[in-house]
Length: 608
Image (cartoon, rainbow, N blue to C red; front, side):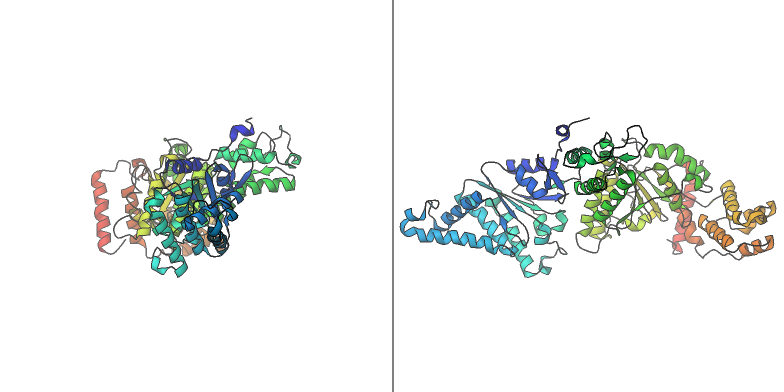
């Protein structure tokens, strides 16, 4: 088992930040991503700002921290140096550090500027606009009258410089003034050619006003969610804290599904908690410590689900736990065989041989969602149902997407289930809204990202496959596999009929009844949803005779959506990417041309 020192986290974002600062590549940096988590500072796990202060504590660097409604924080010795530099800069007297009694008549000027500096520090509390202007002046002062470099961390930059709706004229006066101060500051040639650095901290650059975040001289550095090694390190570090040794450890010979802190299953626990922040992992460990019980798989699953929903919002995602499997799917014989023998093995791969996912097409009511929920259950992976990642607020859609990506990168393996995918993802053409184009473009890029291949499986359900962006339908994304789910025919239809009649007992089992239903009792395009509706009716009001059964079925009328369902069926057939999944695998190009012709005819009638 590796020791604690063998698993020390490697924070790539900090390495990049250090390179930017040391090289002078940029003097204004936005630190984004997992900024509200805990980080290991070589001694303990601390919030981001203390971590950055510890890691950047080097000679010749003055660290300054400002947070909304808080003071400008400095070490005492740094405050003294800055006060003297300020006094000398304002008075033009280079001997500002000399005691007042040795300065003669200039002493009053020096003392006045020292007091001015202290007053500015006090006034900055609760006055963000004045604080930012004072910090800007400090960097001018440092360039003129200080050898040390300044490293300024500004917390909650999204609150100081809110994105709003992107229009600066709609900000209030104070917000507009702050955006103006920062824009002038970061755009000053002497500043970005100088030696001082300003770091804005926010979860997403999209939350900061675009006048600032999109300046060409501003770079962004993203902190990713903790990886397996980081989680393993935290668990081992937490294990060494006082009292954790009292946590009961099950006998190693028992077939326990728990992950007790202090046992050999720490590595397994680190793997199982993929997606959790260190904060969330700490909560899990503390709960285990308090209850003096091992961490169960159920505890881990619940914590992961709760954390991800907290990060993304319940209106954005939910966790689906399908209880039915492919054995519970009626009919669909050819499709089930394809899923079991081809699709599932490829989805379980973890390299470039894995499928990125699939688009599932077919008319409304054909059973797409039910079948592929069963597929998800067979995979035994977390199933994340994407509800809506669009927001009415400016910039919030980008923030939600960034959170989603961080979650997906942190999870070891996950299924993204998107129902009504054509309404979730729009187009990228000129007619689409800018936010819609940007969102769809990002989703498309994520689907084909090699880093996520074998980790993220996309299952897109839609009755309107033709409305899904062509860029999403191309090979390399879910276009690798577009699966049609059609109305049952042949033996599949007979299986559905028997399943539908099962609640009627012996009344519905005669050969004459089965033949009548297959031949004329039910339309040829009767859907899976129709069979389910009839079965429900027969269970609720059981017929007492074959005559009543025929009357009940004969009373059932399908809604007037036949042409719409035909149009959706043709689109599913035309977009299918596997001949073996078509009703006739020997389909010719002539037949496909006839499908297209029928589609055009339906479109002239207003069917879409």
